[in-house]
Each structure stands twice: as C-alpha cells, then as structure tokens.
Length: 586
Image 1 (cartoon, rainbow, N blue to C red):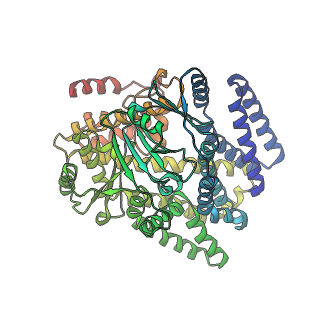
Image 2: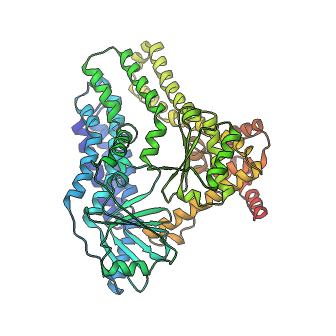
Image 3: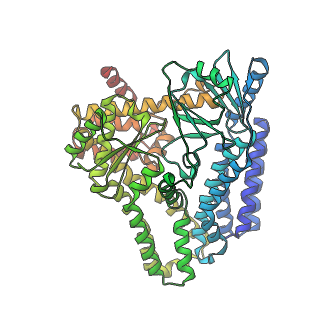
C-alpha cells in the first residue's frame, strides 16, 4: 500500500492535469491530457510494484473522473458567453460583501466530520491498508464536491438584467443564467441556514450555495435546483427582481436561528449523526480505531461493528427525516389517499413526510413495519394525484416486504462470503500472493462483482414493488406505468431546465428521454450496475406482463439480452410499443 503522503501527492498531480486540460483550448487540452496520462501510467509501472502501480492508477482514475465533472467545459463556455453578453447589455451589478468566517465555517464542518477518518489513514496499522484505500476514495469524493463551494465563494458575482428579467451569476465553475419568470418559490431568510446548505448535512435536495456572508439570504426555487444568495431585501434591485417574477409566485419568510440555539439542538444532533455515519465515515472508523488501540480480538471488532450497524439501521428513519428536514403530513387529500393505500398494503403505522426539494423523488426507509416511513419531495407531490398514488404504492411495498433490511442483509452476506472464502482458502490465497497479477485480477473482479450483485438484489425488489404496488391501485398496472411515465418526463424536464441555466446551448443537444430505450452500452450500465432497472423497461413490463412470475422471468432475461448490442439479438421495440401506449393514455 502506498504511503499517505504519496497518495496525497498524486491526488494533487491528477488535479493539476484535470485543471490544465480544462483551461486550455479544447483540442490542445485533449492532446496534452492524453499524452500526460500515458506518460504518467508508464512512470507508475516503472517506479512501483505492479500492485501499488495498479492501486495508484485506480485511485488517480477515480480522482480524475470526479474532477472532470467539476471542470465542465460546457459550463466554462457558458461563463464566457455570459461575460460577453454583460459587456453588451444593460445590467446592474448586485453589491455584496464577503465574510471569510462564512467559508471558514464550511471548511471547519468538513474537517470535523472527516477528522477521525484522516487519523485512521495516517496512524492505523498497515494491516488495514485496503480499508485505508476505500477511506481515501471517500475523501476524494468529499474534497471534489467541496471545490465548487470554495470556488463559488471566491469568484461568484451577481448581475441583474432589468430589461430581460434575468439574474446572472458569474462563477468560475458554476455560472447561472436564471430567468426570473421561471422562479417557482421565493423565500426570504434572516441568514444562511448552515444545516440546510452544507453538503454534509443535506439529503434528497439540489442546492447551489452562493452565500458569502452571514447576512440575509434569498432562496429562489427553480425547476431542478434551489439557489441561495445573500441579498438585501430593502435594496432597490430586490424590488425590481420581484417585479420580474410571476404574480402568483409563492413568497415566504423564515427566521434562521443560530446553530447552538435551543430550538436547533435536536436538529443539530440528528444532522450531525447523519454526517458522521451516512455522509461521513468518522463514526465507524472511530469505533474501529478505539478497538485497535484496545487490542481486542478480531471477533470482538466484528461484533461491535455489527451491533452499531443494526442500531443505525433501526434509527435510519429518524436520521433521514432529520437530514432532509422533512415535515410529516397529517391532513389533506394526499394524506387521506396515502392512508388508504397503507391500509390496503397492511402497513397502517407508516408515516408520510414531505421534503422541500425541487427534484422529483420518493423513498421508503425504516427497518421494520412499525418504523416505516415514506418521503416525497414537494416537486413530486405536485404531479397528478394518480401518479403520486402510484409512487406511494411502490414505496409502500418496499416497507411491506422489508426491502430496506433486505438490501443491508445482502451487503453483509457478500462481505461474509468473502470472509468465509478467505478463511476456507487461506493457504491458497497465500500461494496467490506470489502471483501478483492473478491476485490483482481477483481483487478487481470482486470490486466489480459487488456493485453488480447489489444491483441484482435492488432491481429485483424494485420490479417486485412495481408489480405488487400496481395491485393496490384502481387501474392496476396501467396506472403504475402511467405514473412512472409522468415521473420520468418530469425528471427529464427538470434536468433540461437545470442544464439550460448552467451550460451553453443545452437545449440544442438531443437527449433521449428516460422513458425511451437507450443505446446498448447505457442499457448495460443501467441493467448491471444501477439500483433501478431502466425506466423504459419498467413501463414496458407493467404493460406486457400480468403475473409476477412472468414479470420476474422477463426481467431476468432482459438483464442479459438488453445488455447486448442490438446486432446480436432482435430488438423488442420497447420505444415504439411504449409510444403507442402513451398515445392511448393521452
């Protein structure tokens, strides 16, 4: 296992490669990028043993893949376009004053949540090298996600175009061109709500945080994402902003209390617990670190980790509700319809929560029937009542069949199988260490098999939830298929809108709808590695198969057939058949 300093050095070097190719012209950047990467790979194989070289290559590839999502050339082109437009258009710059304490607090939370994991990397024994490797991958994700936040603080500038009713945000990595007539909701907050804005504390939402001080905050909800900016409500420009919005735009005010305020302590506790156990890894690495320091036997370590895992699973509903700032629904038409579905499914004690979020999503959580919780985003709740009922029915089956518990047990069985195999074939594995290439192939095979195995289990539960959930609905499979179709279209529209705000000529790019059959490679990725089967297939199966056995058999076959290029097999023409069904619905 390479030393921590070595890994950090290559992390910085990979970041430099990604950044340089980002700032150079496209063709020059690509040529330089390919040349440097090839030379980099050759250098690693020359300087290190094959196992260390492959590990560093994997780590650097992961770093590079994470960074190119941030260093987006389309957003860079949007930034240049907006700068040129501002030079030729009547605009007003919105004055803002930066407070370095705002960014410092964000950085402090990242370090606080990650601190024990960092200590584990530097001070845990080398026998835990593989665990250190995966902890390193977690830190890569955390750091790359936080790069955009730091860049927004340093480079963001706000402009208002009064003649066109547009709010322009210039930012090196996250520029935005926001038509004010598309604002869905506006909320005035007395200050930044750190527990809602910081990525370590959030769940089921898409926030873009441009706040740079502790002054009052303007929260603008657009299709697909929510924008947070510091703004003075008494300024003249604020009045002009409001005039540019639709007359029926929902407007609210919210008082944000300090983190240590008594009214905020419970929320702070649960969000903090979510940060260190779900978003972060400090809780588990901290426990493991203590057990290593106490020099307890391996079986005691495993026992402690399993007990904490079961405890976290037991309280998962509370943790996720707190992390998403969800509010329980206790009255209204949607509440009544949901209660009827829960009664039909035999899960009367299930609670329904709404999450204030512009994304279209729903989920079920809870270890057992008595702790079942279904969460819907406010955007999802705005869909037609039949679609929302279909989504709730799908999630109700997840709770009825204890799918959340099944997923966790599946994970433990996989790791248990590896542990058992290591114990039974320990002597053979020792021999394999003399054949480094074969051992490396085995490790990469297991790393690929794990997500495929989880995908198989998850997709099986999803197909079952679709089928059994449809039996709870008035129109059965047809209503579930219509619901999935409407949900897919809404998600596609939200993504399209979001891209139009941040990228150049986003509307000119032809993208297939999620309800349509994609090319074979994307189908392969979705069927073999994703949690949900492709949406087109879910709609097609609900319309085509009338029993669970036929649905299960068809899905099992589709995981193989639909993952192959079409020239190897006869196409099932899902797109054409689904399109005919949609015309019939309309």
